[in-house]
Image: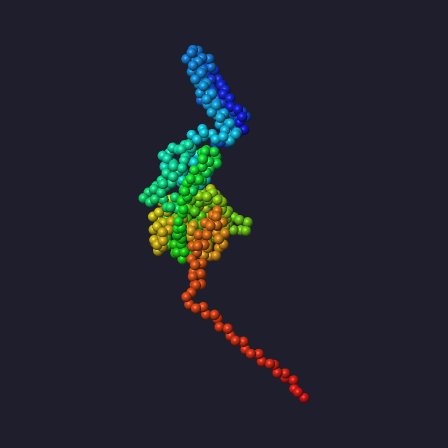
Length: 399
Protein backbone atom coordinates (compact mmCIF):
# COMPACT_ATOMS: atom_id res chain seq x y z
CA UNK A 1 0.00 0.00 0.00
CA UNK A 2 1.04 3.54 -0.58
CA UNK A 3 1.58 5.48 2.64
CA UNK A 4 -1.00 8.14 1.72
CA UNK A 5 -3.60 5.92 3.42
CA UNK A 6 -4.25 7.02 7.04
CA UNK A 7 -7.18 4.99 8.39
CA UNK A 8 -8.86 1.65 7.71
CA UNK A 9 -12.50 1.18 8.80
CA UNK A 10 -14.61 -1.97 8.80
CA UNK A 11 -18.04 -1.23 7.29
CA UNK A 12 -21.22 -3.06 6.22
CA UNK A 13 -23.52 -2.70 3.25
CA UNK A 14 -26.81 -4.51 2.48
CA UNK A 15 -27.15 -7.14 -0.26
CA UNK A 16 -29.78 -9.67 -1.34
CA UNK A 17 -32.86 -7.55 -0.71
CA UNK A 18 -31.55 -6.45 2.65
CA UNK A 19 -31.53 -9.92 4.28
CA UNK A 20 -27.71 -10.09 4.34
CA UNK A 21 -24.90 -7.60 4.71
CA UNK A 22 -21.42 -7.63 3.16
CA UNK A 23 -18.33 -6.61 5.11
CA UNK A 24 -15.79 -4.36 3.42
CA UNK A 25 -12.85 -2.16 4.35
CA UNK A 26 -12.94 1.60 3.81
CA UNK A 27 -9.49 3.14 3.20
CA UNK A 28 -9.14 6.87 3.79
CA UNK A 29 -8.12 8.69 1.73
CA UNK A 30 -7.19 5.59 -0.28
CA UNK A 31 -4.19 3.60 -1.48
CA UNK A 32 -2.65 2.79 -4.85
CA UNK A 33 -2.87 -0.84 -5.92
CA UNK A 34 0.64 -2.08 -6.80
CA UNK A 35 -0.65 -4.28 -9.62
CA UNK A 36 -3.13 -1.99 -11.40
CA UNK A 37 -1.66 1.31 -10.12
CA UNK A 38 -5.23 2.53 -9.55
CA UNK A 39 -6.40 4.32 -6.42
CA UNK A 40 -8.58 2.10 -4.23
CA UNK A 41 -11.01 3.22 -1.55
CA UNK A 42 -12.76 -0.04 -0.72
CA UNK A 43 -11.87 -3.70 -0.38
CA UNK A 44 -14.56 -6.39 -0.24
CA UNK A 45 -13.74 -9.13 2.28
CA UNK A 46 -16.16 -11.73 0.92
CA UNK A 47 -17.69 -12.08 4.40
CA UNK A 48 -21.49 -11.89 4.86
CA UNK A 49 -23.63 -11.54 7.99
CA UNK A 50 -27.35 -11.51 8.72
CA UNK A 51 -28.97 -8.06 8.63
CA UNK A 52 -31.54 -9.04 11.28
CA UNK A 53 -30.48 -12.23 13.07
CA UNK A 54 -33.58 -14.17 14.11
CA UNK A 55 -32.05 -16.45 16.75
CA UNK A 56 -28.99 -17.00 18.90
CA UNK A 57 -27.27 -19.15 16.29
CA UNK A 58 -27.41 -16.35 13.71
CA UNK A 59 -26.26 -13.79 16.29
CA UNK A 60 -23.29 -16.01 17.22
CA UNK A 61 -22.47 -16.41 13.54
CA UNK A 62 -22.52 -12.62 13.07
CA UNK A 63 -20.21 -12.16 16.08
CA UNK A 64 -17.68 -14.65 14.69
CA UNK A 65 -17.68 -13.05 11.21
CA UNK A 66 -17.33 -9.57 12.71
CA UNK A 67 -14.29 -10.79 14.68
CA UNK A 68 -12.72 -12.12 11.50
CA UNK A 69 -13.45 -8.87 9.69
CA UNK A 70 -11.91 -6.86 12.53
CA UNK A 71 -8.82 -9.11 12.49
CA UNK A 72 -8.38 -8.42 8.77
CA UNK A 73 -8.88 -4.69 9.37
CA UNK A 74 -6.16 -4.72 12.04
CA UNK A 75 -3.81 -6.56 9.70
CA UNK A 76 -4.42 -4.05 6.90
CA UNK A 77 -3.95 -1.10 9.24
CA UNK A 78 -0.70 -2.61 10.50
CA UNK A 79 0.51 -2.70 6.91
CA UNK A 80 -0.41 0.97 6.55
CA UNK A 81 1.59 1.87 9.67
CA UNK A 82 4.56 -0.21 8.52
CA UNK A 83 4.61 1.59 5.18
CA UNK A 84 4.17 5.02 6.77
CA UNK A 85 6.98 4.63 9.28
CA UNK A 86 9.20 2.32 7.20
CA UNK A 87 8.74 -0.74 9.42
CA UNK A 88 9.26 -4.10 7.78
CA UNK A 89 5.94 -5.75 6.98
CA UNK A 90 6.23 -9.41 7.91
CA UNK A 91 2.96 -10.23 6.20
CA UNK A 92 4.69 -9.57 2.88
CA UNK A 93 7.14 -12.35 3.72
CA UNK A 94 4.34 -14.84 3.18
CA UNK A 95 3.83 -13.58 -0.37
CA UNK A 96 4.59 -15.58 -3.48
CA UNK A 97 8.22 -15.02 -4.50
CA UNK A 98 7.72 -16.94 -7.74
CA UNK A 99 4.90 -14.64 -8.82
CA UNK A 100 7.13 -11.65 -8.03
CA UNK A 101 10.04 -13.22 -9.95
CA UNK A 102 7.84 -13.97 -12.97
CA UNK A 103 6.54 -10.39 -13.08
CA UNK A 104 10.07 -8.96 -12.97
CA UNK A 105 11.25 -11.42 -15.64
CA UNK A 106 8.51 -10.32 -18.02
CA UNK A 107 9.58 -6.71 -17.51
CA UNK A 108 13.21 -7.55 -18.28
CA UNK A 109 14.33 -9.92 -21.03
CA UNK A 110 14.66 -13.52 -22.21
CA UNK A 111 17.59 -14.23 -19.90
CA UNK A 112 15.53 -13.33 -16.83
CA UNK A 113 12.71 -15.53 -18.10
CA UNK A 114 15.10 -18.47 -18.52
CA UNK A 115 16.40 -18.04 -14.97
CA UNK A 116 12.82 -17.88 -13.68
CA UNK A 117 11.99 -21.16 -15.43
CA UNK A 118 15.01 -22.86 -13.84
CA UNK A 119 14.17 -21.53 -10.37
CA UNK A 120 10.52 -22.56 -10.82
CA UNK A 121 11.67 -26.10 -11.62
CA UNK A 122 14.17 -26.06 -8.74
CA UNK A 123 11.60 -25.16 -6.07
CA UNK A 124 8.85 -27.23 -7.74
CA UNK A 125 6.56 -24.28 -8.33
CA UNK A 126 6.31 -23.04 -4.72
CA UNK A 127 8.44 -20.46 -2.92
CA UNK A 128 7.54 -17.69 -0.46
CA UNK A 129 9.61 -14.64 0.35
CA UNK A 130 10.30 -15.94 3.86
CA UNK A 131 11.94 -19.05 2.36
CA UNK A 132 14.65 -17.02 0.63
CA UNK A 133 17.91 -17.51 2.55
CA UNK A 134 21.57 -18.23 1.87
CA UNK A 135 21.13 -22.00 2.07
CA UNK A 136 18.33 -22.04 -0.50
CA UNK A 137 20.30 -19.78 -2.84
CA UNK A 138 23.40 -21.97 -2.65
CA UNK A 139 21.31 -25.06 -3.37
CA UNK A 140 19.94 -23.31 -6.46
CA UNK A 141 23.51 -22.58 -7.58
CA UNK A 142 24.35 -26.29 -7.28
CA UNK A 143 21.18 -27.06 -9.22
CA UNK A 144 22.43 -24.91 -12.12
CA UNK A 145 25.65 -26.93 -12.24
CA UNK A 146 23.75 -30.21 -12.57
CA UNK A 147 20.63 -29.36 -14.59
CA UNK A 148 20.59 -30.12 -18.35
CA UNK A 149 20.11 -27.60 -21.11
CA UNK A 150 16.58 -26.79 -22.24
CA UNK A 151 17.02 -28.06 -25.81
CA UNK A 152 19.89 -30.54 -25.44
CA UNK A 153 18.82 -32.66 -22.49
CA UNK A 154 22.01 -34.75 -22.56
CA UNK A 155 24.24 -31.69 -22.12
CA UNK A 156 24.70 -29.60 -19.00
CA UNK A 157 24.74 -25.81 -18.94
CA UNK A 158 28.02 -24.16 -19.92
CA UNK A 159 29.93 -22.55 -17.07
CA UNK A 160 29.51 -19.11 -18.67
CA UNK A 161 25.77 -19.67 -18.98
CA UNK A 162 25.64 -20.68 -15.31
CA UNK A 163 27.59 -17.56 -14.35
CA UNK A 164 25.16 -15.37 -16.29
CA UNK A 165 22.10 -17.06 -14.79
CA UNK A 166 23.56 -16.80 -11.29
CA UNK A 167 24.28 -13.10 -11.76
CA UNK A 168 20.68 -12.56 -12.89
CA UNK A 169 19.30 -14.46 -9.90
CA UNK A 170 21.37 -12.30 -7.56
CA UNK A 171 19.92 -9.24 -9.30
CA UNK A 172 16.43 -10.56 -8.51
CA UNK A 173 17.38 -10.90 -4.84
CA UNK A 174 18.71 -7.34 -4.79
CA UNK A 175 15.50 -6.07 -6.38
CA UNK A 176 13.34 -7.94 -3.83
CA UNK A 177 15.40 -6.47 -0.98
CA UNK A 178 15.11 -2.98 -2.47
CA UNK A 179 11.33 -3.44 -2.72
CA UNK A 180 11.16 -4.46 0.98
CA UNK A 181 9.98 -7.96 0.09
CA UNK A 182 12.80 -9.72 1.94
CA UNK A 183 14.28 -8.52 5.22
CA UNK A 184 17.94 -9.32 4.43
CA UNK A 185 19.90 -9.37 1.18
CA UNK A 186 21.66 -12.77 0.86
CA UNK A 187 24.04 -11.45 -1.82
CA UNK A 188 26.66 -10.47 0.74
CA UNK A 189 27.04 -14.16 1.66
CA UNK A 190 26.90 -15.65 -1.84
CA UNK A 191 29.97 -16.45 -3.94
CA UNK A 192 30.36 -15.25 -7.49
CA UNK A 193 30.86 -17.61 -10.41
CA UNK A 194 33.75 -16.68 -12.69
CA UNK A 195 33.46 -17.07 -16.43
CA UNK A 196 36.12 -18.63 -18.64
CA UNK A 197 37.33 -17.17 -21.95
CA UNK A 198 35.75 -18.89 -24.93
CA UNK A 199 36.35 -18.58 -28.64
CA UNK A 200 33.46 -16.98 -30.48
CA UNK A 201 33.31 -18.97 -33.70
CA UNK A 202 32.78 -16.92 -36.84
CA UNK A 203 33.16 -17.07 -40.60
CA UNK A 204 35.96 -15.47 -42.56
CA UNK A 205 35.17 -13.31 -45.58
CA UNK A 206 36.00 -16.10 -48.09
CA UNK A 207 33.88 -18.57 -46.08
CA UNK A 208 30.96 -16.13 -46.08
CA UNK A 209 31.21 -15.73 -49.86
CA UNK A 210 31.38 -19.50 -50.30
CA UNK A 211 28.34 -19.95 -48.07
CA UNK A 212 26.36 -17.40 -50.08
CA UNK A 213 27.17 -19.34 -53.27
CA UNK A 214 26.07 -22.68 -51.75
CA UNK A 215 22.47 -23.85 -52.01
CA UNK A 216 20.56 -24.56 -48.80
CA UNK A 217 17.64 -26.97 -48.41
CA UNK A 218 15.80 -24.21 -46.51
CA UNK A 219 15.92 -20.95 -48.55
CA UNK A 220 14.38 -18.98 -45.68
CA UNK A 221 17.20 -20.12 -43.37
CA UNK A 222 19.85 -19.09 -45.88
CA UNK A 223 18.30 -15.67 -46.34
CA UNK A 224 17.93 -15.07 -42.58
CA UNK A 225 21.46 -16.26 -41.72
CA UNK A 226 23.14 -14.14 -44.38
CA UNK A 227 20.98 -11.16 -43.34
CA UNK A 228 22.25 -11.57 -39.78
CA UNK A 229 25.83 -11.68 -41.07
CA UNK A 230 25.25 -8.38 -42.88
CA UNK A 231 23.47 -6.63 -40.00
CA UNK A 232 24.63 -8.31 -36.76
CA UNK A 233 21.04 -8.83 -35.55
CA UNK A 234 20.39 -11.71 -33.13
CA UNK A 235 18.30 -14.73 -34.04
CA UNK A 236 15.41 -13.70 -31.79
CA UNK A 237 15.29 -10.25 -33.40
CA UNK A 238 15.56 -11.67 -36.92
CA UNK A 239 12.57 -13.92 -36.21
CA UNK A 240 10.51 -10.96 -34.98
CA UNK A 241 11.63 -8.47 -37.63
CA UNK A 242 8.78 -6.75 -39.49
CA UNK A 243 8.84 -4.53 -42.57
CA UNK A 244 7.82 -1.45 -40.60
CA UNK A 245 11.15 -1.61 -38.74
CA UNK A 246 13.00 -0.81 -41.98
CA UNK A 247 12.54 2.89 -42.67
CA UNK A 248 14.15 5.58 -44.89
CA UNK A 249 16.53 8.04 -43.29
CA UNK A 250 17.05 11.73 -43.96
CA UNK A 251 20.18 11.20 -46.06
CA UNK A 252 18.39 8.93 -48.49
CA UNK A 253 19.60 5.63 -47.01
CA UNK A 254 17.62 2.98 -45.16
CA UNK A 255 17.80 2.25 -41.44
CA UNK A 256 16.68 -0.71 -39.39
CA UNK A 257 15.29 -0.01 -35.92
CA UNK A 258 15.04 -2.91 -33.48
CA UNK A 259 14.52 -3.14 -29.73
CA UNK A 260 16.53 -6.23 -28.94
CA UNK A 261 14.58 -8.90 -27.09
CA UNK A 262 17.55 -10.03 -25.03
CA UNK A 263 18.69 -6.70 -23.59
CA UNK A 264 15.79 -4.36 -24.47
CA UNK A 265 18.39 -2.01 -25.97
CA UNK A 266 17.23 0.04 -28.96
CA UNK A 267 19.47 -0.02 -32.03
CA UNK A 268 19.06 2.20 -35.07
CA UNK A 269 21.52 1.06 -37.74
CA UNK A 270 21.99 1.80 -41.43
CA UNK A 271 21.36 -1.22 -43.64
CA UNK A 272 23.32 -1.99 -46.80
CA UNK A 273 21.82 -2.25 -50.26
CA UNK A 274 23.04 -5.83 -50.43
CA UNK A 275 21.05 -6.71 -47.30
CA UNK A 276 17.95 -4.98 -48.69
CA UNK A 277 18.21 -6.89 -51.97
CA UNK A 278 18.72 -10.13 -50.05
CA UNK A 279 15.33 -9.83 -48.34
CA UNK A 280 13.57 -8.53 -51.46
CA UNK A 281 12.90 -5.11 -50.01
CA UNK A 282 12.44 -3.56 -53.46
CA UNK A 283 10.25 -6.36 -54.80
CA UNK A 284 6.73 -5.28 -55.67
CA UNK A 285 4.26 -7.08 -53.42
CA UNK A 286 0.78 -5.63 -53.12
CA UNK A 287 -0.13 -8.02 -50.28
CA UNK A 288 2.81 -6.99 -48.09
CA UNK A 289 1.76 -5.22 -44.89
CA UNK A 290 4.06 -3.16 -42.62
CA UNK A 291 3.27 -5.49 -39.72
CA UNK A 292 4.18 -8.63 -41.72
CA UNK A 293 7.33 -10.48 -40.74
CA UNK A 294 10.33 -10.28 -43.05
CA UNK A 295 11.04 -13.98 -42.45
CA UNK A 296 7.58 -15.51 -41.92
CA UNK A 297 8.67 -19.08 -42.69
CA UNK A 298 11.70 -19.17 -40.38
CA UNK A 299 11.34 -22.01 -37.85
CA UNK A 300 13.44 -23.16 -34.91
CA UNK A 301 13.81 -26.62 -36.45
CA UNK A 302 15.89 -25.06 -39.25
CA UNK A 303 18.66 -24.08 -36.82
CA UNK A 304 19.74 -27.68 -36.27
CA UNK A 305 20.22 -30.22 -39.08
CA UNK A 306 19.42 -27.89 -42.04
CA UNK A 307 22.03 -25.38 -40.83
CA UNK A 308 24.66 -28.10 -40.28
CA UNK A 309 23.99 -29.63 -43.71
CA UNK A 310 24.33 -26.24 -45.37
CA UNK A 311 27.70 -25.64 -43.69
CA UNK A 312 28.87 -29.10 -44.70
CA UNK A 313 27.84 -28.51 -48.32
CA UNK A 314 29.89 -25.28 -48.32
CA UNK A 315 32.95 -27.15 -47.00
CA UNK A 316 32.92 -25.33 -43.65
CA UNK A 317 34.07 -27.58 -40.82
CA UNK A 318 33.69 -25.05 -37.99
CA UNK A 319 30.94 -25.54 -35.39
CA UNK A 320 28.60 -22.81 -36.61
CA UNK A 321 25.31 -21.93 -34.92
CA UNK A 322 22.92 -19.19 -36.01
CA UNK A 323 24.35 -16.85 -33.37
CA UNK A 324 27.75 -17.13 -35.11
CA UNK A 325 26.30 -14.89 -37.83
CA UNK A 326 26.36 -12.05 -35.28
CA UNK A 327 29.95 -12.92 -34.39
CA UNK A 328 30.80 -12.90 -38.10
CA UNK A 329 29.43 -9.38 -38.46
CA UNK A 330 31.45 -8.12 -35.50
CA UNK A 331 34.73 -9.79 -36.47
CA UNK A 332 34.55 -8.80 -40.16
CA UNK A 333 33.78 -5.21 -39.16
CA UNK A 334 36.88 -5.27 -36.96
CA UNK A 335 38.91 -6.75 -39.85
CA UNK A 336 37.74 -3.90 -42.06
CA UNK A 337 39.04 -1.34 -39.56
CA UNK A 338 35.67 -0.15 -38.25
CA UNK A 339 35.96 1.74 -34.96
CA UNK A 340 35.35 -0.44 -31.91
CA UNK A 341 32.87 2.15 -30.66
CA UNK A 342 30.95 2.05 -33.95
CA UNK A 343 30.76 -1.75 -33.69
CA UNK A 344 29.56 -1.39 -30.10
CA UNK A 345 26.70 0.87 -31.17
CA UNK A 346 25.72 -1.35 -34.10
CA UNK A 347 25.65 -4.49 -31.95
CA UNK A 348 23.87 -2.72 -29.09
CA UNK A 349 26.44 -3.62 -26.43
CA UNK A 350 26.15 -1.72 -23.16
CA UNK A 351 29.87 -2.03 -22.42
CA UNK A 352 32.71 -1.62 -24.90
CA UNK A 353 34.54 -4.47 -23.10
CA UNK A 354 32.05 -6.87 -24.67
CA UNK A 355 32.77 -5.48 -28.13
CA UNK A 356 36.53 -5.65 -27.56
CA UNK A 357 36.30 -9.41 -28.04
CA UNK A 358 35.71 -8.87 -31.75
CA UNK A 359 38.82 -6.74 -32.03
CA UNK A 360 40.75 -9.57 -30.37
CA UNK A 361 39.27 -11.97 -32.93
CA UNK A 362 40.38 -9.84 -35.87
CA UNK A 363 42.65 -12.00 -38.04
CA UNK A 364 43.69 -9.11 -40.24
CA UNK A 365 45.11 -7.20 -37.27
CA UNK A 366 47.05 -10.28 -36.19
CA UNK A 367 48.44 -10.83 -39.68
CA UNK A 368 49.64 -7.24 -39.83
CA UNK A 369 51.41 -7.48 -36.49
CA UNK A 370 52.94 -10.97 -36.73
CA UNK A 371 55.91 -9.92 -38.90
CA UNK A 372 56.91 -7.06 -36.61
CA UNK A 373 59.08 -9.37 -34.48
CA UNK A 374 61.98 -11.19 -36.19
CA UNK A 375 65.05 -13.25 -35.31
CA UNK A 376 67.05 -11.81 -38.19
CA UNK A 377 69.23 -8.73 -37.82
CA UNK A 378 67.51 -5.61 -38.93
CA UNK A 379 69.43 -4.12 -41.84
CA UNK A 380 69.20 -0.38 -42.04
CA UNK A 381 68.88 1.00 -45.54
CA UNK A 382 72.23 2.08 -46.98
CA UNK A 383 72.91 5.79 -46.86
CA UNK A 384 74.46 7.11 -50.07
CA UNK A 385 77.38 9.54 -49.50
CA UNK A 386 76.81 13.04 -50.70
CA UNK A 387 78.77 14.06 -53.83
CA UNK A 388 81.51 16.65 -53.10
CA UNK A 389 80.61 20.12 -54.07
CA UNK A 390 82.74 21.64 -56.90
CA UNK A 391 83.62 25.28 -56.98
CA UNK A 392 82.09 27.24 -59.79
CA UNK A 393 84.62 28.80 -62.19
CA UNK A 394 83.84 32.25 -63.46
CA UNK A 395 83.64 32.43 -67.23
CA UNK A 396 84.67 36.09 -67.29
CA UNK A 397 87.81 36.58 -69.40
CA UNK A 398 90.66 38.41 -67.84
CA UNK A 399 92.14 41.28 -69.71
